[in-house]
Amino acid sequence: MSTTTKKQAQTSDFAELLKEHFSRLPKSGDMIEGTVISVESGAVRVDINGLMTGVVRGPELFSESSEYANVKVGETVQATVVEQENENGEMELSFRVAGHQRVWDRVLEYKEKSLVVTGKIIQANKGGLMIQIDALTAFMPVSQLAPEHYPRVPGGDKNRILEHLQQLVGQGVQVKVIDANQKENKIIVSEKAVWEDEQKAVLESYKIGDVVEGEISALTSFGAFLKFGQGLEGLIHISEIVWQRIDHPKDVLKIGQRVKAQIIDLNKSKIYLSMKRLVDDPWKSVKDKYTVGQVVSAEVHKIEPFGLMVKLDNDIHGLAHISELSDKAVHDVKELEGLFTLGEARDFEIINIEPAEHRLGLRLAGLKKKKAPEAEQKEEPVEKAETKEEPAQ
Image 1 (cartoon, one colour):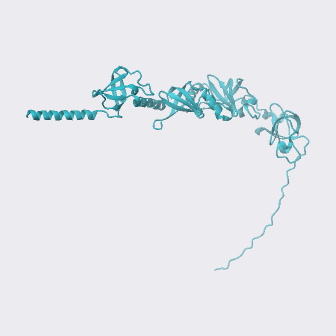
Image 2 (spheres, helix red, strand yellow):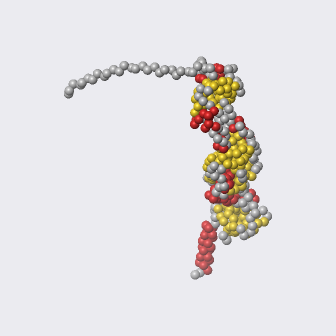
Image 3 (cartoon, rainbow, N blue to C red):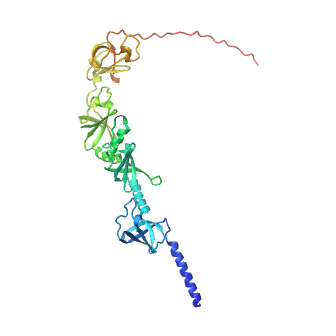
């Protein structure tokens, strides 16, 4: 082979090798993995599988993530190719996208393994809280707050709820990731889920029927919350506070008051309690104290459009329906304004007693017993239908 031919062959082989080399090089936007070979002068240099040296510098070193803030020589890192070759013959790399992806991978792992993570409350709105987890921002709806932080605002006033939530900004909080969607850039977290796990462990030492003692921690229109044991909290529904009907728990309870209650249901981490079941139902013996036809002096306890709630004693309350307060036809108690005063004692006649339904009916003493209107029975004359025979075909 001539010298010229040999040189041409070598040139051709080199060109092929060069072409193959560059074809193996990652392109702009590709994710690569390499080994850190130096960290100096605000730049990190990475060996890319022996093919080339990449450099990460300037703003590409760190994004909102601090994933690679403390990389060391010898560590394996991931980076994104920004430029195949810079002015120094090195591949320009960025930790931005790679760091962001690593954080997302970790968040997805938190969700899959139901791990507890620590986040920071950075913002509040009427719907909930914004939580920073690593370099990502998650949302925690109000419904996912633990009882300790849940805003028990009378009437559900959204402005007052927001005021309560704003007081939590800046605090650290332990949460679980309950939903994560990278495509939609959406992460939902729950503090309640962490609390429920803690509750389950403690609840194993309790069973339905147990009597507990604790402190009233909150009063709402639907019931009272009782804190007891090791950070446990249960709900005493308004119907389970006393045997009498009450309008609001604050009528008989105060925040901070110590009371005893019985566990009546354990539903996962939710605890339902009853105070009234620790005392005998006074309605069981109501007929031993009162009889139909008896006239009693009783206190006007409440005035409603449909009648008067009357307190016979501390345990037994009855209803004097509007139809039993006047000889005239009355449609609203306001029509009898001035005739009845809250707290005054009046004479009433007991007209019915229903212990099982906890009902006792009253009539203002001295009124005539109303007679039910007699049903007028009008018999319509029955006409016999004439049968007409059709002519045979």
